Length: 93
Image (cartoon, rainbow, N blue to C red; front, top):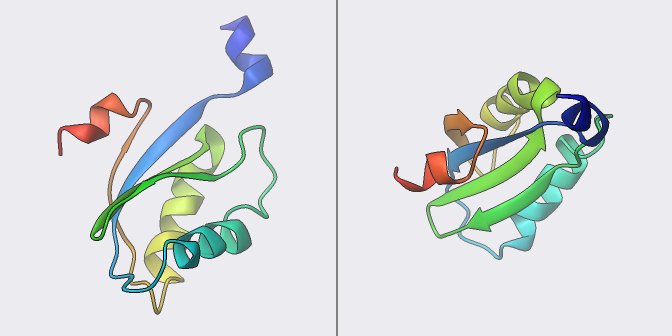
């Protein structure tokens, strides 16, 4: 685990949203709310469809990120579904 300590560990969060506008609304939300938190792994929107999406965060910020997504996303109405260490673990849902 020495290599992972230097690079950092990632968590992927699957979420549902009600964003009817462009994808940039979701990107701006994640940059402002979660991107400002200090971590080795930067927050990044991996995938976003019309109803669901996947975001990558640092493993130490996964719980905080889920709380922010569930509580502070008024106009986007984001609801987290599942957290995984790999994208493959989320694609079956």
